[in-house]
Amino acid sequence: MPGWQLRRSADGGRHVDVGVYSDHAFVDRGCTAGLDASDRWQEGRTPFDLSARTVRLRVLVDRTSVEMFVDDGRYAHSTVVFPDPSDTGLALFTIDGQAVFRNMVIREFAV
View 1 (cartoon, rainbow, N blue to C red):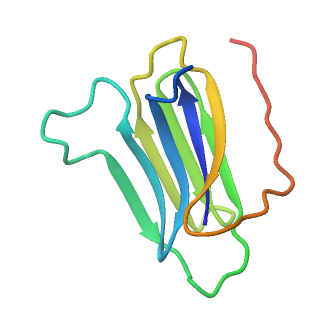
View 2 (cartoon, rainbow, N blue to C red):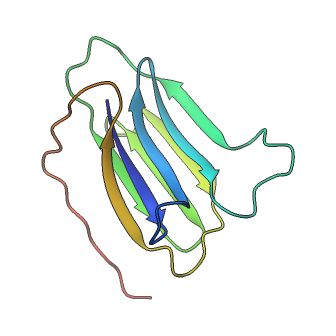
């Protein structure tokens, strides 16, 4: 299943993961700094139809937040993140198999 590592550090040790796995879509900030000490609020999940052969993800990233919209807004995730300002990398990944990433558009907005 497909996923992205956002706000990735140069060594890959810090990042926010978003994507789809098994029966859920997720945003996981467990590999970022400044988390809640209880570790309870690291990952958000919403249902995903296992029979679907495609998924449309729209992901918005700014300095302190990540938002992900699944299948044109059917589900939405929004989370605060605390990345190091130098963590600006991006990586694509798959879990348990192959994925084809199509029609990927990256836009950078002026601040």
